[in-house]
Image (cartoon, rainbow, N blue to C red):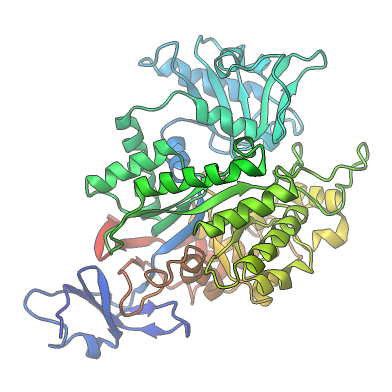
Length: 560
């Protein structure tokens, strides 16, 4: 019998297997879990010899590593290293003061270097309802191009220098997949919304290889600190993938990186363009996919990504609804769909035919409907294909949609923290949607009760990276006791929450054969915690500290 390189004994080990079993000890060899059981069953000559390291957990909790199945890994790292407004509610003057201070302190940057301002909450600019424009940014004492990129990545504000570098002016035509803001006389006001914001951001001059690698290092270190061992980057680019590939080549990659390649509407002006677009995704995947999938962390481009609609919060309100937003001054505003039905159907089908799992941004129930319709057509065309389509966010769902997800074997990836709302946000939701639709907000429990596979994705840096706080919100549906509870759905249990971030997320990524639970034959992706999340009060979940993070049997984070 093979001897273990390391064993862990005397623990409370949550396995996340199909029975949610608890064991005391595990044995690991060459990055694989080779046995689980009691301490007596593992700590003996069957698994232990003179070369085996023995760790006594002393009753501490061990569980599978967190799998964050929807986030923007590299963008999160960029935010850690840029001018950051830290998600604060600020006036325009306060915002400009912070940016000016950053400009003044950044003596190494020349006039042609971009200043990217992150962690900006557009909807929280004070007083509420105020917008920052290029005319505000032009007051800054700088000759540098300056942009604000919103926390949800759906709004970008540029100063006049930046707009010029983007090649945008009053003659720029209106896009079909978002908005370019203008004054009453047609001049650009510097505000770009939805896809134009993302395209503009992507066009900013490339980082050096060294800068990109350093950002990737920052990102994975922050993730490992919170117990994350695998991620699915929901909009991966060449620069980002290159940076993580270099870490892999340097043998310093400490997360399993899965990526979704976006299929933007602008790249597919007709159905005839789709084969070429899918072929480019295949070529992209072939550059980065790890051909030898093993316990050592690797990279896999596993998904395609489609932004089907926008966001539902004011002032954008671009999430697609089945019925109009309840607005006093606009009676027929349904939000946006960024693809025609014909195009959406074809992109999902052709992605699946190529072996990619379609992953769709759907915030409103109107977007959910057209995606479920497309998935149904894909299932009929490919009845035997093991394709695992998923939708991200599902902030507003209709009651009849839960059963359709189960029927179609479609998955949902939730950002649980969005069920923690201020009083003002809850009132805005009630006003925008009415009481009946309000009951479909952040319907985590209703999806789970319908038997739908639900996974977790933090969507970092849309919000601060705080996985255990996000889990707490799923279990309480309120920010804290001083804030109201979003009371249209039940609280989740600790097991439901942690399965969503382990084995369910592995299923969405089609990796449940390798990761997501502590079972014989799987990769040893593990975390050790300072307290037991199954016995503490729900309100204490945010205080869980990760003591150790292990990826493929190798310790990648140890709390000091």
